[in-house]
Length: 201
Image 1: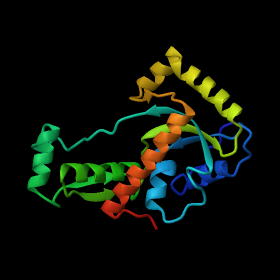
Image 2: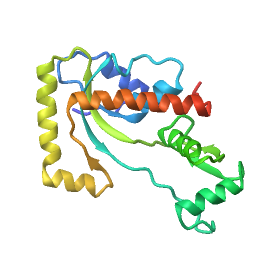
Image 3: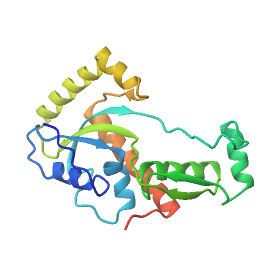
């Protein structure tokens, strides 16, 4: 059974799985937002993304794409950066909301490229990766079996093609590699949020 428990930046559904029985039947299709981004932008969360979950595997990753108005004179990334640098604070970028993944990605881009673009938040959703997580204290044998079966499913040519056609890259890593990725991802977005002064009340 799949239960889509949305709301509050995916905090509600994520917290529900954090508090679920660690029996291998309650799993979270986690995304960067509730696992890596929320700890960076919310002062408090009802769950700890590291202590309350046992990572199983990252399923997919996919890129962000920079799209500009066709009337803009910039026709390449380099031209866009040069144009934005020539007009500090005059250019805007849209995101799916304050503290959303694409908001922080754009702030990281601002920082790395030396730009000062203004943020315009809209309502929506943005993701950077999908992964399966189980409640903490799920027995390691169950985590290993889940990982084995999910990685096998991701290797299926039909499944792989379906995901690839949606611009997703299948991952299917070990639970240890996924746990290390989450730790690094949390640190990255925390640093970006602090540097850009991004917080959700």
